[in-house]
Length: 347
Ligand code: GLY
Image (tube, rainbow, N blue to C red; front, top):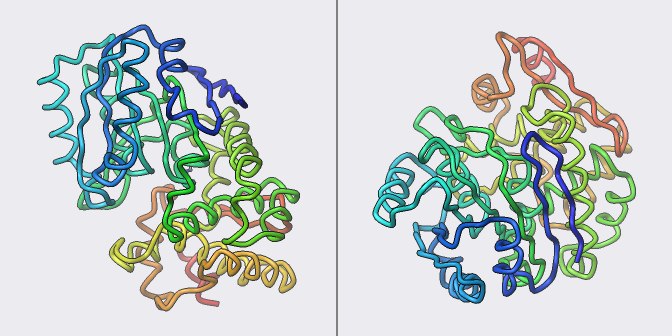
């Protein structure tokens, strides 16, 4: 078993252990006192794992009710959130009880925001079941729901009390989900760790599971380091957005349907690297993402993407912050005016 402690304003452990889903009760009962919880999950993960989690909690006398919503980004909204609040009231959840997010990024984000806001804040545990959620969204305390105006526009910083990652559950992931997580793993290599990038480029979508434990640990540890330095995303944490300014725009252009976050990040990283860095680096990055069935470009015309970029949360006043990696393992934050960004991207 490996444990990473995240030393944020409210510190917590991340447990990385194969088979940990069936012994979650042990880890949770040694972190939280309450014997009552609500597990929040989606219909797909509910069928796969919820009963195993309920049993493992019962082994430690923790009583759990399960709230299930339909899988997908379209559920991450204020209506689902309101249904969650009603369910928590029905089950008499108090401030000393806690929530468990069992699922991918959507489940983690909405459960985290429910925990941040219900009764002005209760504890929650993250049990991420996708690669993307294990290495990115379950760590660092960003929680949110989507509104009509855009993705993740209503949210809060709320660190979990505990994160439990079981790499065994990644084996049931559809290949598109694995690819999606690999885009974020490639991002970590690009921004911080040449050895990680090499590990990824020396494998492919069929054999990356051979080194999954090492990959998950290394990515989480990079995120830990970045988040510890800038918990509230006012500086260094922005490097985690490498590929995301264009990536979110491409996802938005596709209406967030039939186009995953990972595909957007992959195309976003490749486009910005091709435009602003060396040919050699750009070719190496493209070759790497292709090994994971990820795109190197987009069909969306740049002039149609730019309006999405200027709505991005990474915008400040009339400026946009974007990230480049001039070499593998090193990221730079660049601040330019929206007009200058448009010129760079159209060039
Ligand atoms: N997913 C980017 C961050 O947590 O800052």
